[in-house]
Each structure stands twice: as structure tokens, then as C-alpha cells.
Image (cartoon, rainbow, N blue to C red):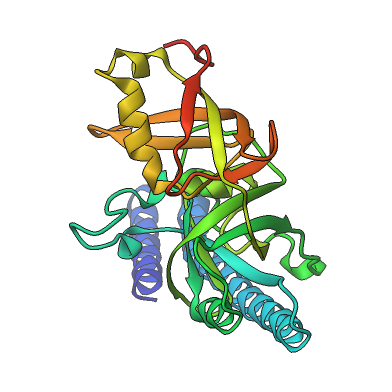
Length: 296
């Protein structure tokens, strides 16, 4: 509002100068084009303010309706004792980073760990489900009205711009904590990119019991990983932040402030060869490599 008043005062001053110059010289100092430019500037603040206000209002209404929709679905599933829940996705951030000296500190983005709402924890306890608590998640396409189709939410490349992450229909995850707000889930960015999820997209979550892996074949994206001293040992140490592993997924580890990416090529479990997923938590797993996917 203050800027608008300044623009109006500026135009008045210019008008006075123009009229005064006209009386003295018979000519104007300002051309019509310049005058139009000044007038157009006064329109921009209105345009920006109203556009932002409109977008903010639409986003707020959309989020409220989405939360209500997801909450209703979960209440129905709870009433029917179904092992299926719908959650709104957001990326893990620094506030979920465990304290120094605790498991997964500074590695939440290089793991399969997600922050879940407390009601999931209550269900796991009430049903006496033993750890490890593994889940499968899938993207759900929510139908929206025409009013909300152009509502833009923050997209995940803003948080993770690495492009060579494989797309999947579903990913298997484990739990980091139960700090998420009701009906929300906070995921590592690689999981969101794998499922082509943006902020405030919806996923379906189900608890699953997994077989234990016996061997895993990985494909490094860069050959510089093999320049490390004892790369296999480093990988085995970093993979302890993963409780389960999904075939064809692109996982990452961080070592000495450098991030290394790997494609999961093959998983063999104790009972099945080339399985889709298996647990690697507290398991004696043989890890092997194939030729790097990308040269660097």
C-alpha cells in the first residue's frame, strides 16, 4: 500500500513538471510512452498482491480438503480393521535428524527410513507386530476439481536435483520415528523421486513382512566409488541405515561428504531368487557389484 501511494505521488509530481515545462517551452519533457510506463508500474503491485493472495487461498483450501479426505479414508479403514492407510507426503528435513551419537544421525536422506504418525505406532502395538516394521508405499492419484488443477506445490527436484533415479510403482521402507503429524508421512527425497511424488501428494501405506536377503547385486553410478579404500567395506557399513532394499531402486550413501548412488540390480532371499524386496537388517548379506552405470 505504501508503494502504491509513492507511485501516485510520483505521477502527480511528474504531471506538475510536465505542465510547468509546457508553459515555458511549449514542449513536454515526458513522452506519452514514458507516461504510460509509469502508469503501468502502478498496476503491478495490485497484480502481484492479488495473484499471490489467490494462489495462497487456493492452496489453503486444497490442503484443508485433502487432509479431510485422507482423514475420512483412514477412519473408515480403522473401523474395518484394514491394513491400509493413506498419508500426505512431505520430504524429511533437518528437524527429523536424530541427535548426535544416535542411530541414523546425518543419514536420514541416505536410508529407507520414514517419519510416520503416532496412530500407526498404536496399531503396530495393538496387533503385536514384531520388528522390523517394514512398509510398502504406492502413489495414489487423487482426483481434483478444475479449481485446484493449477495449484502448484513445491516439487521434489527443489530438494533433490539428482536426475538418474529410477522410477518405481512402489517402494519398501522402514520407520525412522513417529513424529509426523496425523495423516502425514515424511520421506527421504530419493523415495519421493522414485515414486514421482511432490509435496502434498498422497501415498497408500501397508505393513509387510519380508524375507531376509542372502545376496544383493548393486551397480554404482560412478566409477570413482571404486577409488575409495576398501569400497565394499564402506558400502556394507553405510547400508546398515537401510532395513530393506527394493529391486530396481536407486539408493545412495554418503561418505566423507560425497554422495554415491547405486542401482539395485538383483536381490536373492533365503527362499526366492531375484525377488522384488528383502530385509537386510541384522542379516549376513553378500554384496556384489556390476560395471558402473555412468562414467565420470
